[in-house]
Image 1 (cartoon, rainbow over the protein chains, first blue to last red):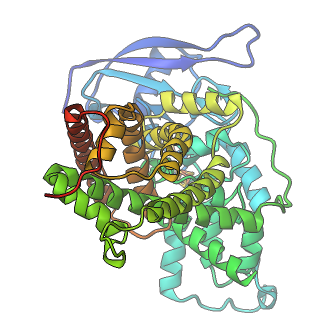
Image 2: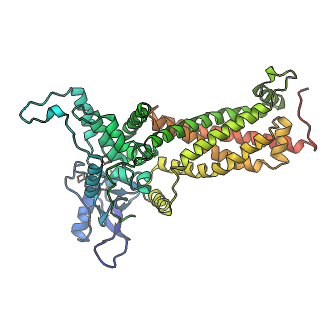
Image 3: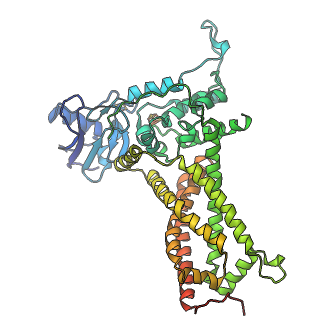
Length: 245
Length: 241
Ligand code: SF4
Ligand code: FES
């Protein structure tokens, strides 16, 4: 445990709301304390040194997904990153690329997530027989529930979008989070959509066939979601429907 | 760093490209695997020169179907036919891969900025594949046309080409580009279609394979240069004693 170090934070600063403001990197010094996370450090910087510093957080426990940023070149959650992890006492913080910048380290991932949900219709489309709310829901096979839960763990932090160079190059590409959610509904026996329906949404260049397998999503997702497996699964499945088309 | 706002895509998918994008993805992988595997054999056959002129002579004649020819020398036309076939595979691969190629300046900028901001080894590897792919787009046809036009393969004839006709320059460029591109291309196909989830092991293996093929290729090239330098012009085809 590295104690007593003085950390240097190089932080990206830019407020698009401020006329004339230009993007710049600003350095701050801070004494490291035991168990310090980047999130704790940022709060102290804001309290003690610069109240104008903008960044997001809610849960402080890796659940809400709002504190994602690029920490020393790795897009990840600030509240889950210990400063002791960096043997070099310099920590560079950048906002997640590819999103609308609100200011400094704060980006509008919510807007992106909403748009992708609307575009891909990322909600359950119940089968015709499941509409009556007075009827008891049919029980789900526990194994299926476990499989769904595994994919349901996404916290919409946006890391996979930022970590994907394909997505950065092609705005219309759905990105890993969209594909992951599609995979989740595709697995759900309650969902009325067929492979064909999903094929129409992601069976194209902007969907699964636009993915170039750079695996930034797989390597950076803070929830360790199985992106590589899921995208490969969707690719095989979507590719196989081609035979019957 | 982008500060732009995303505009949602129209909900209706781009109809064009549906089947084609799936087919193109399959075709790109299939042609890539075919060429990757071909390269593995190619480099090994051609490196038989390291075992001596006789070894290479027999490998060439065997591959050119010597057992079916009366004079035991085989049919060089086989080399031409294979070269034409590989050219067709190459064209298909290039066409399907080109749809991935960043065509707008903005895309290159986004790629550079992503490479600068995010540290990620697989993205970097892909970037090398992109660059080597662009180089191969020009280098591979030169090599294939050469084989289609004058398929003189043999210990002396190949060495003459390498040394006296200066094709070593082509091979010195082609070798690293093709090895990097093919090895990591095969790795990517495996993880892309979910053929293996032992990705880290596979990547380590790919690194090892890359070094091995480079050493093999460089050693053979040196060998051809050495043989070429000892030849007196005009060169006569080698025949085993
Ligand atoms: S899939 Fe992972 S990286 Fe992507 S938004 Fe969800 S939790 Fe974040
Ligand atoms: S503050 Fe909620 S995930 Fe970090």
